[in-house]
Image (tube, rainbow, N blue to C red; front, side):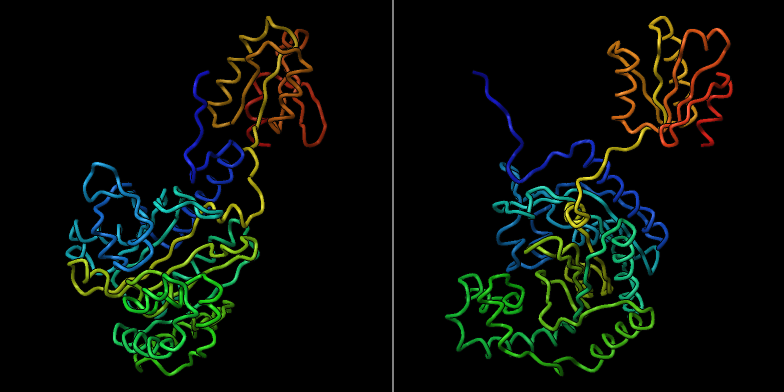
Length: 414
């Protein structure tokens, strides 16, 4: 018996209905990016491992568990996220010498090397945006609003914006020391990963999804007043812009995100429709990443939304794109004329198709219904002699005889 091949675990095929839903999300996102004046860039799947280890942090889950390494290609990985990659592109092309402010968007596949779980595929897709060159709090708010606008436009209704600030590097360092001190007597309540994180990167403990770890961190009653005055003012101004624009949010003091490059504003958008893996997208400021990767001291902010998670939140796998016209024939001798009409309709930008399986007229009509065709064009022998066709409006259940020469305008303008 020949081997039966299956898709690789942690990857997914998209059928025509899902592909339609996927592409609809992408098209809406692209329009939103255009409205906000972001320039789309297309970057490779392959990058140097060091870019992400240095960029997102050596002790982050991405660096420790998730990098998808290419066998026999020393130091080459499939990209796990887009921000560090956009910064690499920015620095490699020395764009800082050609302007002081840049806005980029990207859409594409990302990869995880860890064991796949529900809602966490090995290959998944992100759409994201990065704004480089400004530390203005209003920009933070605009980035957040852009992410929300995309989700609104695609139809995600159940969502919540969580927002916090990590402060600058000094604030993070002070907070880390405070966290270690408070957790010292509670180490036994932490998972093995968090016990290790406590000595390397304490803030990662707050981001742990383990129930006991979350319970332990919550019991610490982390309060306000741990930020320097500049960072507190920045965050207050971000919230002020959101308030002014009537954007609902929840201040989540335990939100830190899992990547080391974040500073100041961080946010996450969750949806109850996703279950336990409820994050549909996230982002924040990374004011030191460009400098840490060898570039000038330039602030930046961005976000990414998971397309698969958007589709889950929509609660549907999508529907197949609707056909504008289906050309049917009542007599096989008219198939040549029908095919000619199909090509003419397509030439005018009208989506249409016809029968290639020599089905009866009844079978062709069933096919048209299955394809959700708006119109069915029927080539009948008697009508053809008069230079006419039958045009059936499937939405209105109306059928009329029209001149063949008028068909394109009739369908196009409907």
